[in-house]
Image (cartoon, rainbow, N blue to C red):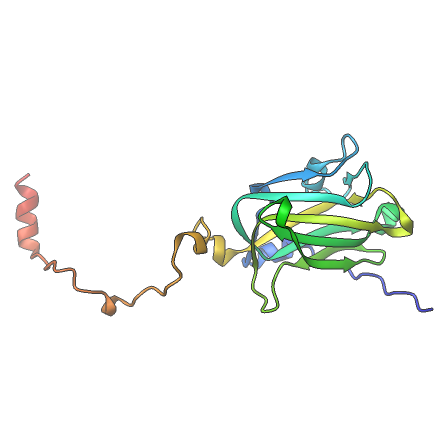
Length: 206
């Protein structure tokens, strides 16, 4: 029986941010957990410290729920796991689900991990590599290494494409998607240009 290859680590997400093509939006969401040991909760998942971690304290599956206040474009999910430090607490099978709320979540990715030690990049895209638009992401730990009961997860980051967020609101909700017309294609509004001299006289009359 062959031994499965270890899950290779992905690049540090900060390298993604430096490309200018994505932006981390985890701070815009409301985070909740199915369970946690006191002092090992959401704050530790989001503190940018690879030495801290979330530790579950209940039965499987262990859930991380990430809920946005509005429908949001998401492209990549990054999870940090460290088998060398966490051993049987390290996830071996993870399901990633999206939807409007808890009642209509659908799985879009399932990962089998073998002794991961580093960042795991999970694309949140469809078959055409188009980013997903969702109100909610749920990360479910279905199994741990060595049949461990509880789990450790050290960091989670969520990225949106910059082209979707650079104007401050989702394009799809506020714009009908039609291309902007060229200046020559605009209809004549019926306003004739005014001479500079007339404009000056109007300003001086006030």
